[in-house]
Image (cartoon, rainbow, N blue to C red):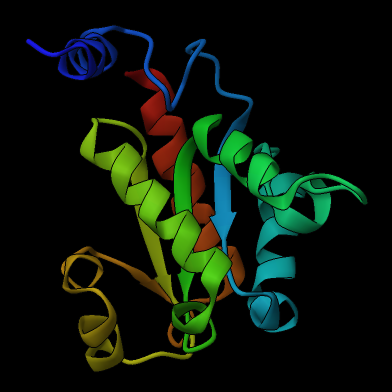
Length: 165
Protein backbone atom coordinates (compact mmCIF):
# COMPACT_ATOMS: atom_id res chain seq x y z
CA UNK A 1 0.00 0.00 0.00
CA UNK A 2 1.29 3.47 -0.78
CA UNK A 3 1.92 5.94 2.03
CA UNK A 4 -0.96 8.19 0.85
CA UNK A 5 -3.46 5.29 0.80
CA UNK A 6 -2.30 4.18 4.25
CA UNK A 7 -2.72 7.72 5.63
CA UNK A 8 -6.15 8.11 4.02
CA UNK A 9 -7.24 4.75 5.40
CA UNK A 10 -6.11 5.78 8.88
CA UNK A 11 -8.09 9.01 8.63
CA UNK A 12 -11.33 7.39 7.45
CA UNK A 13 -11.22 4.50 9.90
CA UNK A 14 -10.19 6.43 13.01
CA UNK A 15 -12.75 7.87 15.39
CA UNK A 16 -10.99 11.18 14.90
CA UNK A 17 -11.22 12.52 11.38
CA UNK A 18 -10.29 15.71 9.59
CA UNK A 19 -13.82 17.07 9.89
CA UNK A 20 -14.20 16.81 13.65
CA UNK A 21 -10.71 16.41 14.99
CA UNK A 22 -11.50 16.38 18.70
CA UNK A 23 -15.07 15.09 18.65
CA UNK A 24 -16.41 18.28 20.24
CA UNK A 25 -19.14 20.31 18.60
CA UNK A 26 -19.05 24.00 19.39
CA UNK A 27 -22.17 24.77 17.34
CA UNK A 28 -25.54 23.09 17.02
CA UNK A 29 -26.19 24.58 13.57
CA UNK A 30 -24.06 25.91 10.72
CA UNK A 31 -26.23 28.37 8.75
CA UNK A 32 -25.14 28.39 5.10
CA UNK A 33 -26.78 31.25 3.19
CA UNK A 34 -26.28 34.04 0.68
CA UNK A 35 -25.71 37.50 2.14
CA UNK A 36 -28.54 38.81 -0.05
CA UNK A 37 -30.99 36.63 1.92
CA UNK A 38 -30.08 37.96 5.37
CA UNK A 39 -32.78 40.62 5.52
CA UNK A 40 -35.58 38.57 3.96
CA UNK A 41 -35.08 35.44 6.11
CA UNK A 42 -31.67 34.51 7.57
CA UNK A 43 -31.24 37.20 10.25
CA UNK A 44 -34.68 36.53 11.74
CA UNK A 45 -34.22 32.75 11.52
CA UNK A 46 -30.81 32.90 13.22
CA UNK A 47 -32.17 35.13 15.99
CA UNK A 48 -35.10 32.76 16.66
CA UNK A 49 -32.78 29.75 16.85
CA UNK A 50 -30.53 31.54 19.32
CA UNK A 51 -33.03 33.44 21.43
CA UNK A 52 -36.10 31.17 21.49
CA UNK A 53 -34.43 27.74 21.33
CA UNK A 54 -31.01 28.68 22.74
CA UNK A 55 -29.21 26.83 19.97
CA UNK A 56 -25.57 27.66 19.25
CA UNK A 57 -25.54 28.93 15.67
CA UNK A 58 -22.54 29.46 13.42
CA UNK A 59 -23.60 32.52 11.44
CA UNK A 60 -21.07 34.52 9.46
CA UNK A 61 -22.07 37.96 10.77
CA UNK A 62 -21.59 36.69 14.34
CA UNK A 63 -18.78 34.17 13.88
CA UNK A 64 -16.40 35.98 11.52
CA UNK A 65 -14.66 39.02 13.01
CA UNK A 66 -12.77 41.84 11.34
CA UNK A 67 -9.39 40.58 10.20
CA UNK A 68 -10.28 36.87 10.42
CA UNK A 69 -9.55 34.49 7.57
CA UNK A 70 -12.98 33.87 6.03
CA UNK A 71 -12.03 30.41 4.80
CA UNK A 72 -10.49 29.36 8.11
CA UNK A 73 -13.53 30.54 10.10
CA UNK A 74 -15.95 28.81 7.73
CA UNK A 75 -13.92 25.58 7.96
CA UNK A 76 -13.89 25.80 11.76
CA UNK A 77 -17.67 26.34 11.82
CA UNK A 78 -18.31 23.48 9.41
CA UNK A 79 -16.25 20.94 11.32
CA UNK A 80 -17.57 22.06 14.72
CA UNK A 81 -21.33 21.99 13.91
CA UNK A 82 -23.86 19.22 14.39
CA UNK A 83 -26.21 20.21 11.53
CA UNK A 84 -25.75 22.18 8.32
CA UNK A 85 -28.83 24.24 7.44
CA UNK A 86 -28.63 25.32 3.81
CA UNK A 87 -30.84 28.27 2.82
CA UNK A 88 -31.20 27.55 -0.90
CA UNK A 89 -32.16 30.55 -3.01
CA UNK A 90 -31.43 31.97 -6.44
CA UNK A 91 -28.74 34.06 -4.75
CA UNK A 92 -27.25 31.00 -3.01
CA UNK A 93 -26.67 28.92 -6.12
CA UNK A 94 -24.67 31.71 -7.82
CA UNK A 95 -22.10 32.40 -5.10
CA UNK A 96 -18.60 31.08 -4.49
CA UNK A 97 -18.69 30.88 -0.67
CA UNK A 98 -22.06 29.17 -0.48
CA UNK A 99 -20.93 26.55 -2.98
CA UNK A 100 -17.72 26.11 -0.94
CA UNK A 101 -19.81 25.51 2.20
CA UNK A 102 -22.21 23.14 0.42
CA UNK A 103 -19.36 21.08 -1.05
CA UNK A 104 -17.85 20.75 2.43
CA UNK A 105 -21.21 19.76 3.94
CA UNK A 106 -21.68 17.04 1.28
CA UNK A 107 -18.17 15.77 2.01
CA UNK A 108 -18.83 15.67 5.75
CA UNK A 109 -22.19 13.96 5.23
CA UNK A 110 -20.61 11.35 2.94
CA UNK A 111 -18.27 10.42 5.80
CA UNK A 112 -21.18 9.84 8.17
CA UNK A 113 -21.16 13.35 9.57
CA UNK A 114 -23.80 15.98 10.08
CA UNK A 115 -27.08 16.09 8.25
CA UNK A 116 -27.69 18.67 5.53
CA UNK A 117 -31.04 20.34 6.21
CA UNK A 118 -32.27 22.29 3.16
CA UNK A 119 -34.58 25.28 3.34
CA UNK A 120 -35.98 26.53 0.04
CA UNK A 121 -36.19 30.32 -0.04
CA UNK A 122 -37.67 32.02 -3.09
CA UNK A 123 -36.66 29.20 -5.43
CA UNK A 124 -38.51 26.50 -7.38
CA UNK A 125 -38.07 22.73 -7.33
CA UNK A 126 -36.97 22.89 -10.98
CA UNK A 127 -34.20 25.37 -10.11
CA UNK A 128 -33.06 23.15 -7.22
CA UNK A 129 -33.05 20.08 -9.51
CA UNK A 130 -30.96 21.91 -12.10
CA UNK A 131 -28.52 23.05 -9.39
CA UNK A 132 -28.27 19.81 -7.40
CA UNK A 133 -30.38 16.70 -7.94
CA UNK A 134 -29.08 15.39 -4.59
CA UNK A 135 -30.52 18.41 -2.76
CA UNK A 136 -33.76 18.24 -4.73
CA UNK A 137 -34.24 14.70 -3.40
CA UNK A 138 -34.02 15.76 0.26
CA UNK A 139 -37.09 16.70 2.28
CA UNK A 140 -36.88 20.47 2.67
CA UNK A 141 -38.61 23.22 4.56
CA UNK A 142 -39.98 26.03 2.38
CA UNK A 143 -40.19 29.71 3.31
CA UNK A 144 -43.04 30.10 0.81
CA UNK A 145 -45.35 28.10 3.07
CA UNK A 146 -43.66 28.27 6.49
CA UNK A 147 -42.60 31.14 8.72
CA UNK A 148 -39.09 31.44 10.18
CA UNK A 149 -40.64 30.50 13.55
CA UNK A 150 -42.18 27.30 12.16
CA UNK A 151 -38.94 26.24 10.48
CA UNK A 152 -36.95 27.01 13.65
CA UNK A 153 -39.41 24.91 15.67
CA UNK A 154 -38.90 21.93 13.30
CA UNK A 155 -35.13 22.31 13.57
CA UNK A 156 -35.32 22.45 17.35
CA UNK A 157 -37.44 19.27 17.41
CA UNK A 158 -34.84 17.52 15.25
CA UNK A 159 -32.03 18.81 17.44
CA UNK A 160 -33.75 17.68 20.65
CA UNK A 161 -34.40 14.18 19.24
CA UNK A 162 -30.72 13.94 18.22
CA UNK A 163 -29.71 14.73 21.81
CA UNK A 164 -31.74 11.76 23.08
CA UNK A 165 -29.87 9.27 20.87
